[in-house]
Image (cartoon, rainbow, N blue to C red; front, top):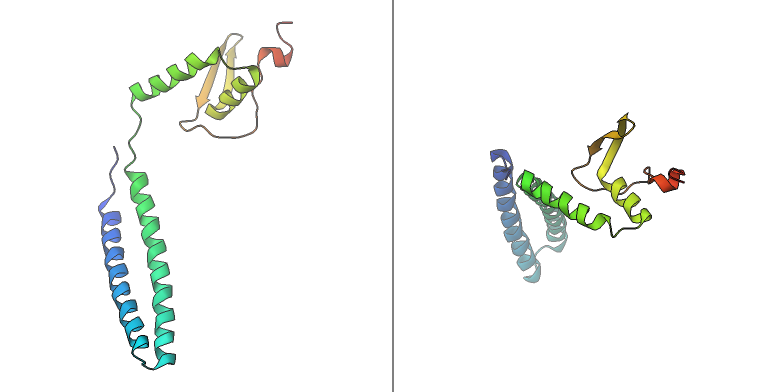
Length: 143
């Protein structure tokens, strides 16, 4: 499993403190407005603090995403093998369109080395894109 770096963790802590302090300030301004203070000045300060809060919250969400991505467990050989076993077990149950879709989602490129040997570049994460695979029957082979 990966780990978040010290800079990311420090930034998250600083942003959390800023968010808490901003919340206290917003509460104080709200109380001053309720007590009938100088409305124009208080409303201006309230608007500024709300904008700061939005910025802090978006920065905090961004750093949380970075930390989450840095700590995602990397797949082991056993996990990859299990995933390919599952694909293999499903292969016989898929029709040609489903096979084409499956191949197109996990194979980035295919290079034919010999008539019966192909080198595949696989994508670690399945993705959607246009179909560029065709089965033998779709190409007219084997007829």
